[in-house]
Image (cartoon, rainbow, N blue to C red; front, top):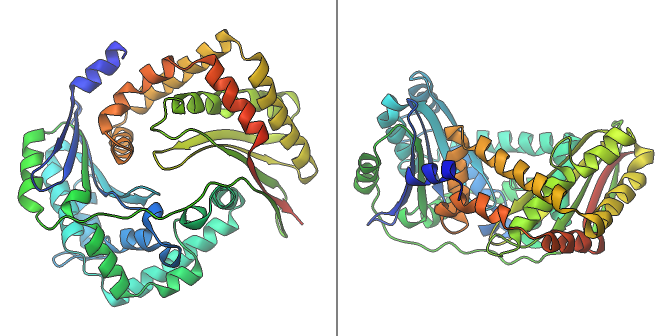
Length: 408
């Protein structure tokens, strides 16, 4: 572990309280604090018939409590200089705010109120259902968003192959009774993670959470799904550019080889110095956007490459992608490998600068096992072997998923 990372780790505390709540904390000197209340429940826990219910609950927790309406929730944070938001992922549903640290008590009070006392007002629920319908439409109408959602459908069966926001069909079937039942099953103290990064007192936070959260424990079920590799092209009128995603399964986060997957992703499409950016955009001028990333978790993991190109160049771009993966499996050098490792570790160091980013970093690592593993990431990257990266690159050429949305 590098010295600067050791310093961050020394400022980190993790404690499971007597009520079952997990509290994560990293001390910072700037008078800012980022706070998240998250529940260990997301898309991966939903039945296909109820897809979108976690995201629906997330929306509704901002719509009013027993003592605050939606406007008052927002004003209490924003008029005190804060920023309020939330997100739903496959593993988590989170509610967060970023505040001046002297206003931490306000942040804790509002987030606690939202988690403990949501009204789930029938009228607000029906209005927000319409909002989510528009969100689903927005994602479909945006070609880049659409291909990213569809590639997951080509990577997984079951609930993992569905949009986190659900479908029109599933959202129409979610009644207030079903929603409240799910909320009561999931939002129990033992499923709650509190992540705080900033100038604050860990013991005071822990005391507040211990005093304000009581209740029965519950266990959240994960839904069964399978990994697949499939390819599909969809045509659409009214668009000028083809959008495509190439994706492939990689070792999960509990595997010793998962850091090699991160290295391969950055090597191939992690920035303007990456192999595919160089080949597709700089050398051949076939695209403006060439980007990649990875989503590596304990239950699923995949790397992806996105390209926006001319309709006639879709097959050519796909061939270039496959050819470059093949090349990496043969000619990757120690120098190139070390450069990519330095890039990843440098990006990691940049990501921890912002307390909000770090708050989410700790949440995601806790959802995958233990937040302290976040601080071991540079060490794991530095240990990646060339043979591991070459092996994953070779596998990607043999078994992959592909989705393209092209002009009709």
